Image (cartoon, rainbow, N blue to C red; front, side):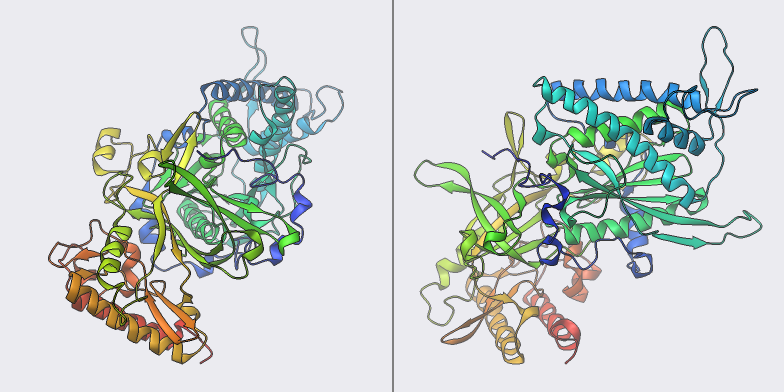
Amino acid sequence: MTTRLTAGEVDLPSSPTMVDDGPDHPILAGEDLGFSDTSGNRDDGLDDLFQRILRRNCDAVCHLAAPSDPDLRTVVGKIASEIAADLEPRMLRAAPRKGRASDPRGNGRANEPLDVWARGILVWTGGQYLPPSAGSRHIKDSEPTRLAADNIAPFFESLMLFVAYHIMEYFNKYIATGVLKPEDCRLILPINNDMDAEHTDFDSASYVDPTDFFSVKCGMFPLSSSVERQKAPAPHLVFADTEIVGHPEYYEKAELRLATKTKALFFNQHNRRFAWGLAVSNCNIHAYVFGPDDIWASTTMDISGIKGRRAFISLLVNWSLCAVDRLGFDPNIRYVVNRCVGGPYLEIDVHEMDRSTGKVEPRTYYSQRCLGATDRLTGCHARYFAASASPESMDKPAFLIKDGWMATGSGSADDLRESSFLNVLHAEFDKSNKFSGSFAQLVSAGPVYISRGDTVVADSTATAFVGLPSTTQDVAKAGSNVQGSSSSCVRQHRRTVAKWAGNMISEADNQSQVVVAVADTMTALNAAYDKCKILHGNVNDRAILVQQTVDGIKGVLAEFDYANYAGAGANAVESPELMPFQSIRSLDNPRAVRTPLDDGESLLNLVCWLGSFGVNKAQ
């Protein structure tokens, strides 16, 4: 039902330079990709949120990156084992031994990059080699020398480059024999990062030397790329952030820096389903998965030991071969570079019912404008796109597409709360001159589907994070080594298409549009309750659209994902993303039964926000 991604369409252009002028376009350029130090701009509540939803020591984190195809998993295992087997003797040759200094050339052989990188890894781990014993030599997993973060960074990159060099050779060999396809392969390489370091002096009583935080970005590149630190690619090719800290005492601060920059990644990459990240403390590496409701951390990969090195190598190989959905991207939203139609744009597949065949098939829309990017680390991650039916008509959008992870409380594909309530409202008001056009008109709505080999599944937190604890019961079953608790529910990845009804109220052109739209919204809220007993439950700056027509200004009410019937109880699930404009009573008790006064108070909160800085800070 979904088409295979091909090189040049999504994540692997034929060369990294094909989008050299792309970042100037709003679709590809974000306000902050996280390349600059954002630690000073961290949300005040991010610390508490991070610690509350973080789950440590989850063995399944690294398994999430494994390809779904069993044959590919076998290939990954073989390649990872051979890379690890090649690394150990190179580190052994580079190690200083009695009567001989370290020899990065491998006993007189050519000083090839692999030996140089292996020596860097050796220096990082502080490994000491024992003399031959019982007919064999091996690495002693000793206590590594403590290094500052900016010293660790190049050695961390050495390990990535060592693995990438082998991956390029192995993948090309497997491609030549037909085992792999070029479009399925990629290199994960470090990105040139202009010394994103923040130095912090420790208390002299505990540690006398200064240490720092250091960031290393990881990007996705084609196999034809040179195996070296790369220049910053187009924003949509940035894969993950790595935060490095030299002293374990400051590891939690490194985690918070990772969370802050991952939030920026969600904001700038409009096809992000979830995100990966890495944190390094001395020789210990943890991989992180950032989902809508939970953050999972892997068990420790201690690269001073053989076992830890092999685990991290396996993760890098998995990232290089798995499908893009396992990297956290949505294969149904593709970045396309086509300067013939005015620059880069998005192809967005929406699965719609074909009335002639009765089958659900993808229909492609085109967009160059993201009206609202996700601005939170967790939650529904809603995004809004001004879209058209063809690339040539993108300057005159006919549709508003909403993409998000909506809380449902179940994994049911037919749990489409918004469309059901809008159908009731249109049935009641479409024939009314006064209220005609007061509510968003949906063209289609449904779940997002992801291909997994020969099967297609509806995308949800239940299908995307298989094996990771996501409920309190799962945590209890996982054992005491998993910390934290969860109040998370099942979220379904859904996409709706509505007829274009203007920009959001926060993008209004003048005060008249704001005043009329707010007045129309108040009237629509009252009518929905009086006639249909429907409470909106999610009045916010993205729920009110401003339509400018030849007949004048019209406010259109949208966003019925959290609607409910009066007296039917609170939201089906708790919805922390609604907090900015919620009523005080709802904030005190999210499960309280809502009344029309809650919607009215939310609208008042929105008006105060619009009047202060929501519309135009300069005025």
